[in-house]
Image (tube, rainbow, N blue to C red):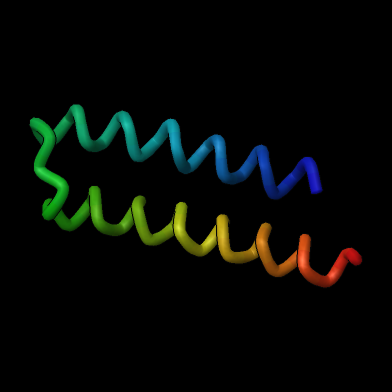
Length: 53
């Protein structure tokens, strides 16, 4: 489970960086791409949690 959380944190940090790089433009294609990667990581973590119990 720790690996999922680490991956989420990496994408969260990267998202913060790219938002700053693109002056807060949340619709910039790179920002959207990193945001989608973060979303997928969160869903994988949630799936793992639901299958754990």
